[in-house]
Length: 313
Image 1 (cartoon, rainbow, N blue to C red):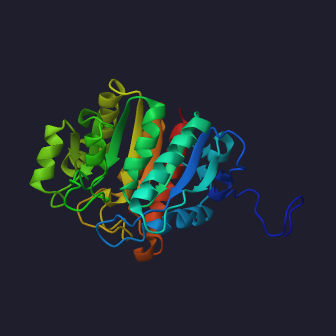
Image 2 (tube, rainbow, N blue to C red; image 1 turned 120 degrees about the horizontal axis):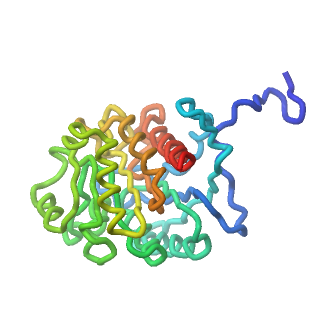
């Protein structure tokens, strides 16, 4: 039945999450959340189609409503998200792509100082450039990293890759080891050498054993309490391989023993409540090997849960 004031067969009482995402007009200053696609996956150690994720992410926003039943929150009533589009990568040069990311993020911070960017990767190598672009605008920044891996490989053996972003940040003095908290690090995913390097640098590590024993809520509370006294802002980086392979089939580095999607979503919801969180990235999703978009759907839910957290502040 056609409804008055609108096209036929449209249920106006069932708003879609896609309605949260507004295209940027290229002129207005953006406040609140903004989605920025960073479609780079050439530096991935393993084959990766993560460069396709931003487009799939936007499409899947069509699949969900904007209403959270548990606390009766309507996201549309509190905020919307501006879609800033994708940063254009260079066709062949990884270094040029990194430069473009850094330059775009830096300019974005100048033009929209009140905005909180949500970077949709891409592989994890983008975090070096996104964080570097932000550091000059945000002062002393700490990082909460969800990951199965330390991502502290050296660059001498293969150049900058998705296994090196935090090593590069530490060596460039853009991030202090004591200001990096890693959550979800798990067995048989890291070498003893890089685990020892993390400890020597003062990195705080919550393994999957810690997550299981303490519970994700307590781990997040501990991470925030530790960082908020040391830094001005907190950058959240979500490598989707922190999830168990049962929840993330579209991940290049799948493995057993990881988080459930419920644990990750709870963590992101809690972080959304905290005023010092200044940016979020979600990386290492490969839609070309995913099953029914399961993995990208987790990322979509992360955005929605982050928004729900912000709405409850």
